[in-house]
Image (cartoon, rainbow, N blue to C red; front, side, top):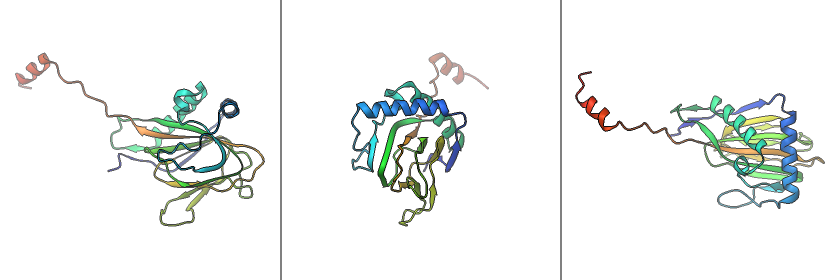
Length: 207
């Protein structure tokens, strides 16, 4: 039984210019000094072409701005996701950045964990004409996407990790920069066991 129900949510993050600048600077600096990873998928297999891909632990091992973004994503995900046990919170399990260049294309895939998020630091030239569209497949048996999202700078998307998605071929001249994250449910909170005195009191109580 699924422990949580996540809707498909799109939110435009206001007053995010400084956040985006810091994220962009950090990712561009990392891409200049660190080779792209082929994939972060547990089973291997490259999902994107013509891109730079970071390691999947930016929230833990990246500059502080990624922690700031991670906390904002957690707030939104916990607000919109209905959980069977509301004492259990969603927290970032992995976070990675992608810088897409002309010729980038993302094959159909989904993510692990429970909830996924995508934040567009810079949507580049994404459009119907230039591609780079985020394509979702509500019906796994159909080859054509059920709905499309045209990326916009400062757009945050939260969706179930099981929902398959792809990215149409991007032909824009400017870099398309995004940060993705997967979220998991924290472990249930353990209730403290009663002490020996408390157990004795309860056993002899008439209440």
